[in-house]
Image 1 (cartoon, helix red, strand yellow):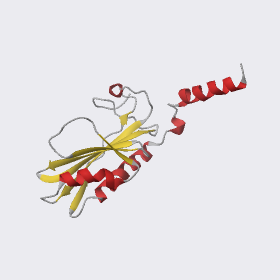
Image 2: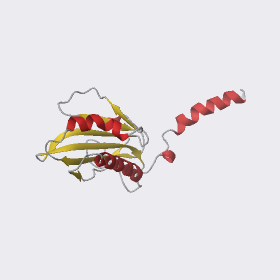
Image 3: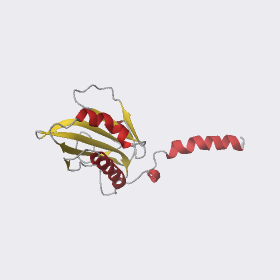
Image 4: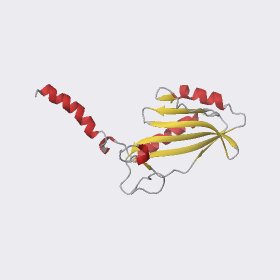
Length: 170
């Protein structure tokens, strides 16, 4: 076999065999911080007056959960914030304009699901996370409902991620 052929084989096999390795995977704390920063970035664009109310953090979800059809190690972060706005807030305009206001690192994706309220699904390519921003009424108040899902991150060895439909990992 020629050296060039062996190089070509190596270029194909190395990424395939190391793609799931934890060496390149960030920590869970890192992906959580990236996700919270994304929520902060979006909440900062909401015109005053507004009130940001983060929900308590859920337990980490395993990236190898059978419902995800994935065998990756680690866990992903999910976060939810309510951003309460004033009566008369223009949800349609804010949500329609949001992708353009976030900049180049963000992309709007059409999930193909019709909903009877203003909604946008956004992907941040730099941090491999997604955010859904929905018009909502929470506790009888008008609000933006922000939900973020991070990429997978490695948990400390003493933490076990939650497996669907609930409970601690094994």
